[in-house]
Amino acid sequence: MNITATHLVPILMLFFLSGPALPQDEPPGRPSPERMKEIKAQKTAYLTTKLGLGVEEAQRFWPIYNEFDVAREKIRSDMRELHHGGQGELSEEQARRLLESALANRQKEIELERTYHDRFVKAIGAVRTLELVRAEREFNREVLRRYRDKMERRHDGPPGRR
Image (tube, rainbow, N blue to C red; front, top):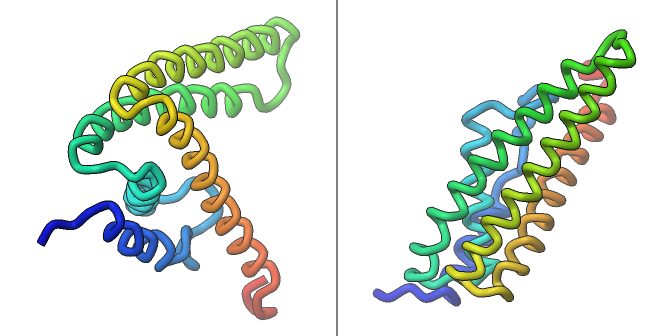
């Protein structure tokens, strides 16, 4: 049986929407590595569906995207470390260095996006690259919305759980 993108859409959307973005028993903060794998799998399904990638396009796109995602996560991890290092009392000089480092990291992320967007355009075209940016933003908003909903349910739960 030959499965086309049209057949994949309902299957992938069912997979994406079938479970909550964050399990009920997960503590607040950064999700566990297992949960991050699950979210990444949902993101892969979501992006594949939103971009309408065929088999050949997906084979060109996903290695580039995965490489980009790892590099972007490294920059963001460095940024989180900077923010954690900036807690507490700082001298003017320490604060200035933190601010400069934060700007340098943001610049690295912009340069990374520029480089990879060019590669995405070659692999899937400019229109789909723009759709990728939008779809990532939509996915991230949905995960954040589910996380907020979960936190609200936690605070509004039975008295014993407050």
